Length: 406
Image (cartoon, rainbow, N blue to C red; front, side, top):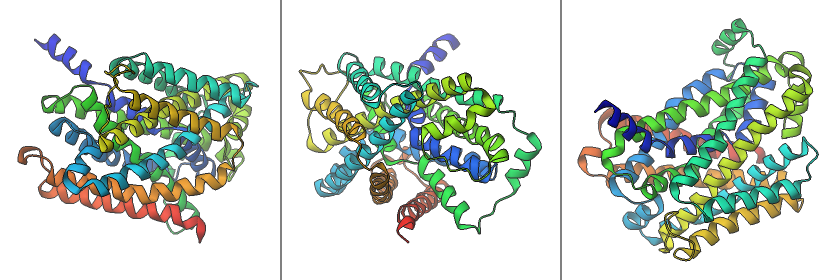
């Protein structure tokens, strides 16, 4: 009996791990590295605090998907009308496209560490990710995504190899220079790197596409909790690795690209080891995020427009789903290879994410109050706590996006 229960749990596990591996994408890696290089361990406590926060948000998405059997965009259309649904999914598409540019920039950066030109590394990534979706089922795509994402765990090895000082880490946990604008900006950037709008769309649609129901809620919550812990351990590992090396010897070092992070760490980790480990971690982070972001778009657009949308359907039965998925990959890859100004694009994407985050989290919270039957609905003190968290994240997201203009 216990053996069957364990097997049942294992079959449910997956969507939470995938979305959380994707959460630690190329942009998040750079943000965590910058945090450690500039502020040492002073942002370490925030990474721990974000574990229950990201769980709280994603658990709502899981609950809505399992109990209603519908995706996020579909529920918005049903309860708030087509206009709001189209607004939500349209901004999601733009934000996802910006995210894909970041992911493919990460792929290109990892390739350049070994002298591979961007057009080749990005082109191969697009081809690989297209084949994975077009020839597989939901379960096969999920397993491949977990396998690819697991390469991010090498960052834990990097952190161990950096030999951080435990006393310095404990000291950093208690030093919070919250009055300094530079510190607060990076703190908000870390929050934005952990709570991303496309995660809600993907996670809710994924549990539906996998065929999970309300009876799987307990296992799905464990899946989400495990993923939340893993993604933050990876962020902590990156922060610790840079804090223990660059933060000690070259404090304040600017780390804006994959190459800069790898070049800064290799004197401490060794040229060969540092390059290989960082390339594996960055490639894993970028590829799994590219899968999640593209699927989130294809699912979200289908939920609002009504086309067939499932990895269980063969391409000829759900052509628009696969076309949208692949088109997003191609456009994102072409923008990276074409040499577009990624700095300007990043600012625009940040503004769009700020506009989307309050919309997505606001709808997520309202749907948890309105669309769920009473036994599963938010209520009491937890409902208030979730509302406060949603409000704070939304306000900080807008602050992070608009602050560069002032």
